[in-house]
Amino acid sequence: MELIPNTPAELLNAFRTQNPTSPRLSWYGPDSERVELSGRVLENWIAKTANYLVDELDAEPGTLITLDLPLHWRSLVWLMAAWAVGATVITTSSPESTTPDPFSQADIVATTNPALTNERIAGAKPAPLVVAVALPALQMRWMGELPPRTLDYSGDVRAHGDVFFADETPEESDIAWQHDSTTTSYAALIAGATQAPQRVLLEVRNGWSGVVQSALKTWATGGSVVLLDPAVEATEHLRSSENVTA
Image (cartoon, rainbow, N blue to C red; front, side):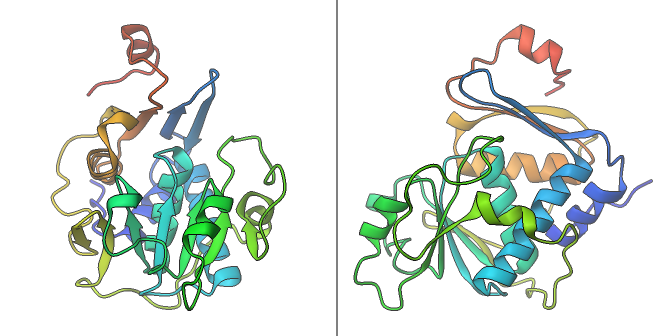
């Protein structure tokens, strides 16, 4: 019997070693976009992103990373990569109403709207590093002009290593995730995962907390996730074709 992962590092190892060619994350997006990531491919994206964070952005345990991204397969990759590094990830339901400001307090901001993000951090000292993230799977670089000192994740990440080795690991009591006013420690991220492996359908409209917590517990027990954009309806045909069990 496989041991249930208790940490992000153990979960990444499970992606790589436990049925690595089986689907772990399927994404349904606008305009009939469907992306399926096996365990090996998902781990590869996470490893490349973690290496990008360390090599290009000097991320380390305790680095504050704000995700100004919608729930998406790429934002789940960013979450897991940040946790592989030992960083603290900040997400919000409504950035405008969050205190303290999730942009000016961050060391790194990953965003789909770099122009607006640069406006938000104007005057912040030190200013966070801004990373533009293109969401479409086939978009190899940011399309259009980037603001000064803004990095292009999609254009740069593929050059980084396929395997991530952490130089440091976070303490169990360190904060892994701050969503609005709720914080989650590294020890609590994947705690309590006991269910049998399932193919779980999750909808973006259910929000960060519900989606991320369900995804982590599903993955930890060897299951897989089908994630739907709000533009996609969870029809019986979709459930059947994806072999959804929960």
